[in-house]
Length: 465
Image (tube, rainbow, N blue to C red; front, top):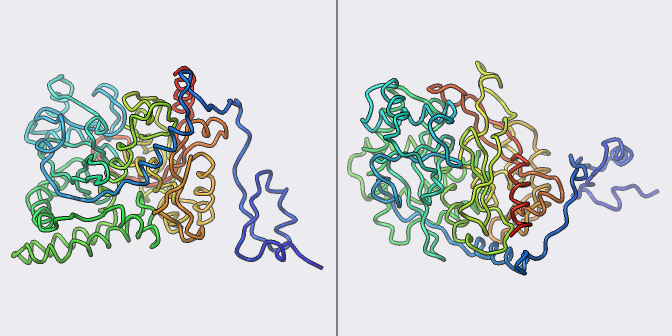
């Protein structure tokens, strides 16, 4: 007698949309089953096809995803933040997420701000830094308002070296600092002599070494291509960047050797990159920013081009309304903690690194990186389910960023506010976890969903527009 395996084969899964018990008979026959955590949306909403002014939403969204797909982003150089980031000045600090002032900043953002002021020499200690931050003498501005992105607290101060990424298809540029590594680091709100010493070494040794090497590469380094390769090697280029970091070191290695004559400094630079599996994150993030900014300003589009958090608020922006934030309280991360910490120590969700999910990798591509579950929790099946679920809320798929485990299907691309409202499925994010108090740093990593309210408000605005 035929069994279900005769019909489905060994390489296919049965997708169960109901109670787990509904698929028990299928499991009893030995067929693999994926249980999708889904329920009908509580507030059904009509699919918008036209704006009030008559714009074709489908055509607008097609233009947005076409621009993202066509983008070719390369690392073209480095520079000092105040000299290369548009609109930055000596009394400005950039931060992750939507706009926020000192009085509402969370612990890790405050820690990063105070640490940056000490690093800049504008304050001698934490007390003086806190007083300066509260005085109104420092301007705080979102990274996203300056074509930049910052992981976790995302604080960029004027003297910090930054990467310069260029979308060669459209000519726009994006910026990001260098990655410090994990643990007690500034971006997690860490403060102290070891934090400032590392930042100074990155300014005086790491940056010049990398910059000299890049100056000898007339075409730069194709970072989008490295992301595509890394997805085939077990990364998703948000919280797993091990392969991508290795690919980057391989790409820049010969230029490093040719342009540096102090072998000990060069060895330390190579060791620093090699021992920091997250080094590539600060390249994958501005790549996503450069891809998405080129798709902004398309009237009628319902595609999300920014998702960002400052540890207090979570905000999104749309391709059709790139200057407007839709915000909600930042969520709580469910994850794995370092031995001495628990969820009671955790700050709410924080950072611009959700630009990776917005651009169609990161949490969208977890099926490509089953090993990431050892870092953020869950299991390989959860990673696969996450990507399959994200196809339900995206407008299209990437052509060049593909997932081997899904027969090289393109990653989910273009979070569509309409589909989020229709399905009730919220974008899933994997992320690091910062301690809620200033000065401590990283305490774990995990996963969570974007808050519903951002998308509800954005959908209401679309209905009115």
